Length: 174
Image (cartoon, rainbow, N blue to C red; front, side, top):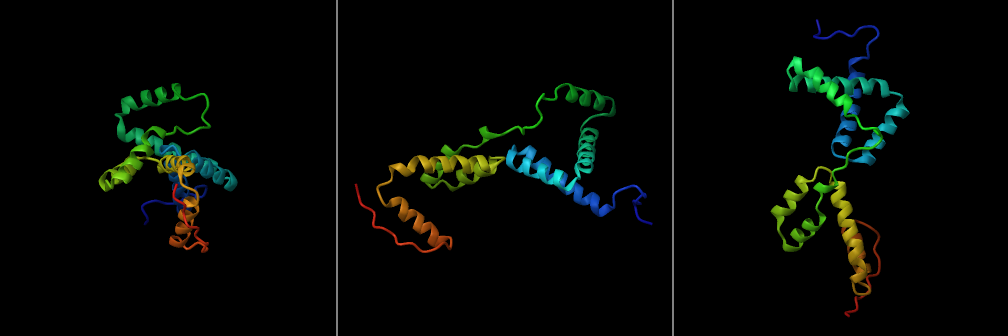
């Protein structure tokens, strides 16, 4: 006899596992403050009309977390406290932009400090902010390049990453 039996009105075990995976992806996006990923996951859930099952799984995950973290006599107090502190606008995800430090990353790369580069990347919960900061830095540096250098860099990137080959202009030194 299996450890669990499906009741007639329950979801099949395979569907429960798939719903758990969807709930985990949504939670991961929320945990890391990735608004785009969170919105994308949420849109998919609404498109698939599975929001009720995922909401049930999220509640189950939260109940399990509370059950494991708190004594039974304290669990209800914790949940009531959470309910009182719910934000008025729940459409957004808490962002963790402060953990991303693109300036330190650029300095570490410039200094050839591999351990610091690795540590900064590992310590950034959502690397989209780190990449966004690097993109901003590149955009700020592009006007400072001598004429032709930007095209030369782009051509080199295309060569390295399998893009189409482009004539590389000779950079003029200022």
